[in-house]
Length: 436
Image (tube, rainbow, N blue to C red; front, side, top):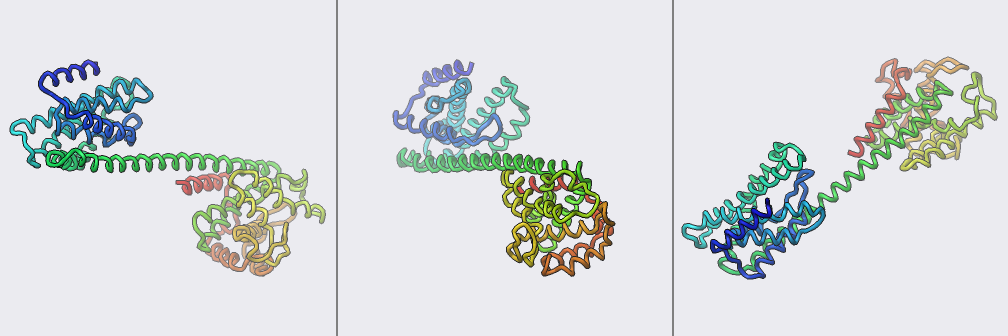
């Protein structure tokens, strides 16, 4: 039907006296329209916008509806690409919309003709509105045939574009027509080529944004999968040692709050929180019975227990993007005086996050019940931390933690309200926020 309508319109316009300018002008306008159409910017899933209508409206005002129809048809031929069925619909539709623009322009110009800029401006406005309105009608018809969505949604999306594009581009086309009438067709290329180049830049920018968004979404999924893997291992430890998961949650909360008190960025706070959740993950590689032993450890058993930070690093280093987390976990039992393990680092050699986790880890261990001893009161544990500054712990970290604990509730100071699964969800949300 569209092809029949386009051919009938062409014959009728030709019979009515429609003629073409030189081949080079028609071919040049069609080429510019085809190039612009190839740089279309998606507006919805099934609809695109471009400045291809500029050469069509120019042809409609400067040369009449028959020339506009031919330029539209040739532009469609120059834009043939898969799917061909879409092109088979688009080509006659583009020709008919261009012809509609030419008829609207002719209705304004017909009484006297001439080259008065005011009349040319009105003709360009009429042609632009007619072209866009006809294009909208064809889009609505295509959508209805394909059952591809709500027509009201399409109207809400494309309708406002008419009120934006028409006043924006009408003066440009009017100047082009006016310049052509007074000077030469070369002025058309001088204006249209930069406009198409600008659209190309917008097209590339949109492609880049889509690629970045896809990459960020993939990174989010990867980080969530990595977190799920790591925390699943810690949850597995909970089956062997009920203390580990709750302890990890408390250390994560304390570590994050210390980092916030020290003025670290939200990203650094999230990193410390995640490291706190998985800092004891290496205990999954310890010999059976060691974690479950109710009494004090022997020297050999203590040596084996001290291997858990290095084991944790080996596990986490195999997870994508967890290299920094693995390094922090490895060093969370170092001491500032260099007498810790596994490498005996001291002072600033120890990552700040590891120094933070070390303090939170020791405090929660002291204030938690164990089979072989009762929990210490918070005030006693805090005194122990203060006594160990500049030997075991970083003074700045201990001071920040003391300020945090002083402002907390008794339940917070005892670590009784920290649920491991809740803290995992907090870490997942932090990943989402960091990526977005």
